[in-house]
Image 1: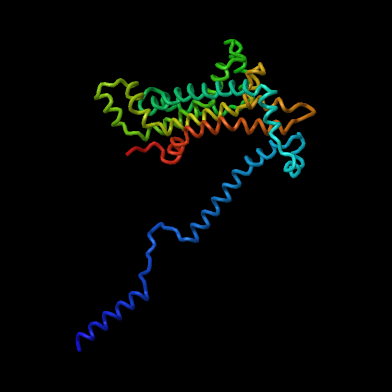
Image 2: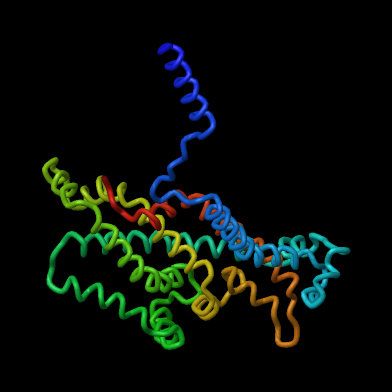
Length: 303
């Protein structure tokens, strides 16, 4: 009698466990399916908004007429790559490409080197006026370009650097170095001082410690500084149009202006050139994207 009762109770317990499965407990911070769906929807919409100008530019570049942007619906029936052919064959596109890469990469190399050494010196060394020095760098960014063009032109003229790549690179460095120096100084501050002390114990000079120990840890910060320097030099117009006189030394930003005259604007060629111009920037971003994302998100904290 008792055995039957025990078996019946066990069967009832089994039926109860089958009928009412245990509730899933959501972890702290875990979002609900509705929240995940909403966040994905927002991200998709934001991505479409970000990609729309690029897609629209590519679409307009396929229109054969300069006024197709006024009636974009008519482009569908007459799409062509003639604009790209004309830009590559009939303009000085490759001269502009050479000039742009020379100036942009030169600005990136010189600017990052100066910024990294400046940021490291202010972060690690204590010399009279080191705090004021960083603020002076920041003050130089307060002057508008229109105020700086004339004195800089006079300086470059005295140095015989008008219409030269070196002159334009030095001018761009005056723009990129102050910001990048602040960026690198903040990044170096997050790297423990014990690493410098370990380098000195091993017999390294201060420069050897900087080059062999600190710089490898600062790759994300260097990537952000390099990307900022490259983009600044790549897209700047005012200085390049003032200091570069030969049409073969125009950068892309200045070369685009040749498609616009007082009474005419070849917008289809401008659109095609703009699409081609985006290729070098995209390639540069591809090479630095890993360290760039790390530098923007994780900072310089090291475990």
